[in-house]
Length: 405
Image 1: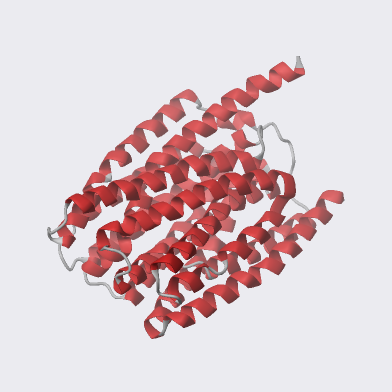
Image 2: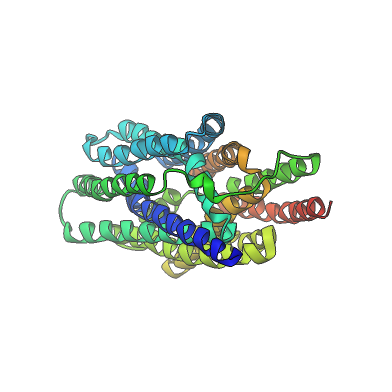
């Protein structure tokens, strides 16, 4: 009887995770497709490398720092669906609007990029909390890994679609062609909103999946969470945003400009399969798997920015994708494990705010270092990511000690 009841809960929980994964798939077709050409588009619109590093980093700062307030509001109001829908709407409207900016209108593009990140800030704590409720039935690592796999499938398809558009538009004005790409991304943007509304209709109360009764926290829990944020902040500080990578490849002319989206598509495929692998490992090994993924991804900048060959850049991009896949699945899973249900949106908000601040600082600094000498970017990126490894180990020991009490 108990086994039958468990299956009756697991099946709809899994269905909800898959449906939200499809939402993420269409969403990532839109904003990750856009992200694959941000660097080139901003450059064509007149932005410098320092500006691109600042804007993409500032966008991430806004996209993460506002999550603190969004998380607190969500936990107080318990309005998970409202915050998710509002955030997705802003997220999905801003990207097609990039098609409307004039030539040399990089300032307008920067504003829209920040608005798009603001939408993600509003939706993410609530959306991640909804998924964590359902993931409690199948394992936090597996739950977020499934969503991340579908998410990155969309992140692969978006750049591939743009590649086809750019390939078919050879010989035309580059700026206008890239503008058309953003207009086309309006199609998956609409599909995102339709699928999201369907998910709300079918599962109006996902919180019922999570029947945990744990209450807020002890000193040990607070310490493990602080250590965890310290480790992930170091990781974010040294993890270059992809527009810097595409800009570097574009400037060196390692590939034709119309194939640049394929590089991001390749990174997203590596991301997708890494998310599945590391999500499964997380449910067995816990936070220790972040030590492995960080060790793999820490050297990506060496291959991308030091060797200046296509083969080396591809290796570095794959390593970047592995690191991103681990981040997107395990980092959320760990927050879901550490933070109690009733405070989980706030926990996501606090964690992602710290992550975003350091992502911003790192992206801005690495953009400036690139303008001086790319090798300085490499040294900074490698050192900060490797510094995260011992802190992850200390965090694991802290969580283990807390569990034994």
